[in-house]
Length: 140
Image 1: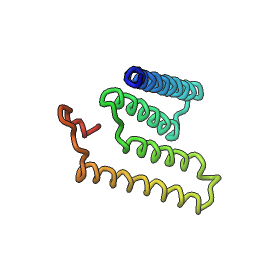
Image 2: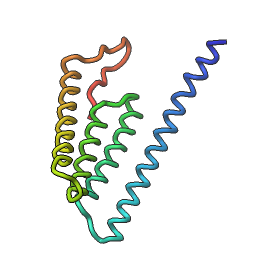
Image 3: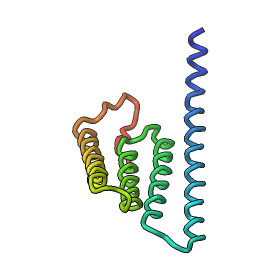
Image 4: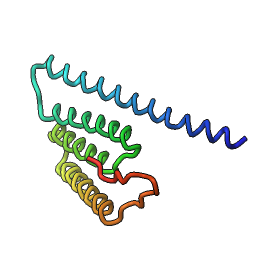
C-alpha cells in the first residue's frame, strides 16, 4: 500500500513544482510587460522602473536555474531583496523619517553581509556530492 502511494507522490510533486514555477514565470512576464507598457504610455523611464524590471529578470533567472539544476541558490532571493529595498528607498524617501531611511540602509547592508556569509560557507563548507551526481555547486 505504501509503495504505490510513494510512487504516485514522487511523480506528482515534480509536476506540482513545474506548474507552480510556470505560474510564477507567467505572472512575472505579464507583470514585466505591464511595466514596460506603462513606461511606453507615460513616455518616461525612471530608475525605479528599471530596478523593478531588474527584479523581474532576477525572478525569471531563479525559475530558469531551478528548472536546469533542480535547486536554487539562497543568494538569489537575497539579491532580489536588496534591489527591492533600494527601489523602495528611492520611491518613498520623501515619506520616510531619517531613522527609517537608516534602518532600510542597514537592512540592505545586513542582506549584503548575508550574501557574503552564504558565499563563504558555500566555498569553505561545501555540501557533499552524492555518488553518481555531477557537482553543479556553482550557479551563475
